[in-house]
Image (cartoon, rainbow, N blue to C red; front, side, top):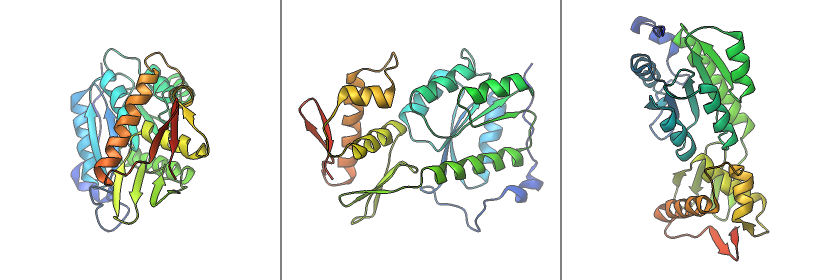
Length: 254
């Protein structure tokens, strides 16, 4: 039997208000993917996170949808319950890491278990939190992992007139002050092309080093992501072409 999620009552919310005096704007809020098959627990936790004013939350009760969202969308952290229906949470965490997802992943579970905790951490999770837990504790851990992730990926790179921030998964036009949100894979592609900016990078190289040749990825997957990335940039940056096609691969125009 699944345990009820214990959260702080409204009277205690002042203990978990945002760390700044003012609530963040929607564009600055951290994006959290919350995957939990228990709808009551998921909704309660999502509402508590939103109440802080620091986060926007995408909810799912499906392991398959959690996988698709984490890989294809742009999030700052994942809260992943180990008892999602029809999927092993540990295997899902492992697959996310193998697929190139580098953002913090915090596992939640219905009961304390050293074995579960060790297995989760060995599979790439950043933390393990057993229920029942106090929301303030989970929030403090989430904030800490977000800060650490930002410190570990704090570098910014100039690509022509654009500032590329891998940690925030953003590309910024410094002349027009336009910010583009990137997915994890789009960020990985741009970072890889930047490191190899004097060379032509083949589709096979991107597939190998960004996707790791997992079964569902092909060179067509690479082409699709490049297309979507170009479309996203062009829609915001007046048809600017940052990624050039040359021969059998791509080169960053910087």
